Image 1: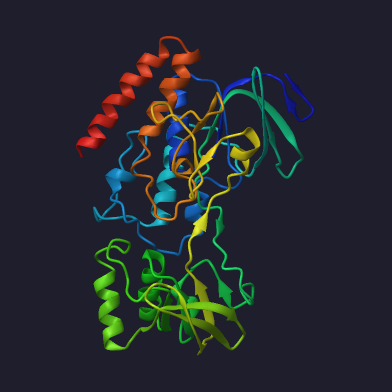
Image 2: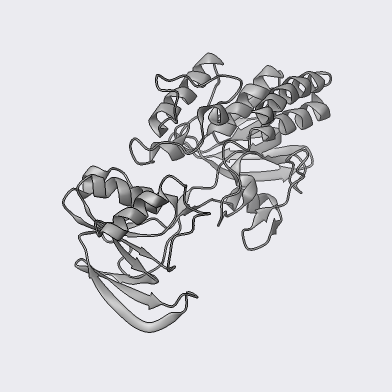
Length: 363
């Protein structure tokens, strides 16, 4: 029954988030005959929508594929974010998945029968009932801000859109991991005058992909890309960035330099929104605020609340969960939900998914 914007008939599962793992879980629930409702605050695969244009995944296609649907392309290589979004749309259409996009979940409240899910679409607040909730919301909602003066100036960005934006411009990139290194190489080849500021003396081969770092080091050695090692930004002005000089241990030396630049790209990473977990009483552990959950079922310490995908890793300082190693979350959650309330369907879902993931791991 629906009264105004209140839906009183409970769903078995409310699924929040329509990235790759959220979509894969929707397919699993639909195959198992589980009544569910699916929300996303924006469009499906939203995070990849603000990736730089023509950015390739580090993962290969077989590790990105979901729900047993292979990713086909004409070059048999790594695909771009745009290609993956097209693939995700095709999976949604193939399985005719109902996803309520642009309906952000603003509140979760648990009682003895399940959860009240409050959403805030443009048409006005709504509420739904669900016995179980799965959070597949990812971990890249906002940039990690430096909280320094000038961070919000118009020529400063945390998002890299396109190398063309920096053609014949002096660009300072702050950061030293994959995103910063790839942006530096692409922007330099796109005609920018690029300098990197990194708080360490050298780049870490364990944190930068092996095909990127030799290229960057070669350009730094040749002088085509500038490198300000052992520096960190203190403040940003329209004409320059004031950088603090650090020693090899990352401690301030008391010296500063001014680097003249036309644009600043802060490749300092992103962080997830843990507010829904906090609302429901999920416990967190360690400096990365890893949510408490049972790794066998993905159920948190809050009964009926499950985690799928990278949200399970907390605030990742060094990434441990990616699309490619979260596929097994789907099998665990479908089996747990069906085992609790779907009768023999749980066994069918478990056998189907166990076989598929055994094949995945073998690859």
